[in-house]
Length: 316
Image (cartoon, rainbow, N blue to C red; front, top):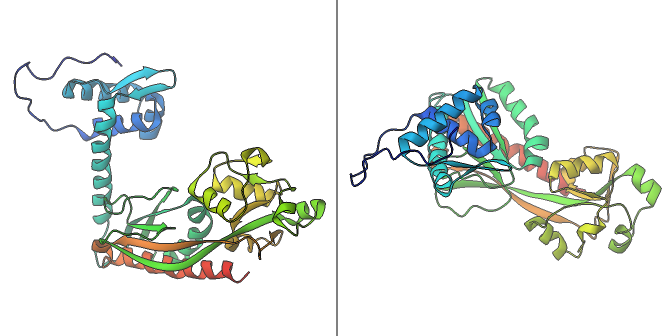
């Protein structure tokens, strides 16, 4: 793929005329932006690498601009390429939303519903709730986006979101399901070997599971009196699922959702009267979707299931 700016598509001095851009070219462009290389984009699209290269070159020729430059890490979007990617992504989200809306009639208990949730909630909590719902309504199809960032419901990146922050946009409909409680936990084997701490200071002497970089959640934990440095952790990761796996494996003392820990008889909560942190949790959808039956079915099931889950962690 030539990375030199292609020849302008319009005659100098003439007024540019907007022409429709082929969607497959835009998909190839977005895939390269997201993956950083032609080969990875080809794998994502299920296409041949020369096909992806040709679509990018055709798009650059049509637009009269260079979209990428080569860097040691792969292909990097130019400043204009980054700007255009935002528009292409908005079109991709609109197309996906259109496909979901067309997947079934508004009154039908079938069709696709896209849900977004944090990695831990999406992996550990939602699947049983959705499985029970699909047993009752086998025509439902679920798309699950696992991310710790807030997907934009106003732009229809998802139909329903599970959020740990109260939404403020008037166009969104939210139902509070309660507080998901966090606590310190360790494997019984680890506590048998190291002893059960009676204070936070004693807890710091155990092998600790923690983070690599500071986040909003980390700052909240520090505000409760557990001010730890990265150097103190025996196992470090910013991935919440990896931290949970490390706690379950007995690698150290860490923080996880109480509702998950109570499911494992080998996990023991440490200093519950000293350390406890609640995440206020909501199920959210756009007001335009609240009367679409498939969305309403999923929304109500998530509210009921997450309410029960939140209560299970608050009784310990």
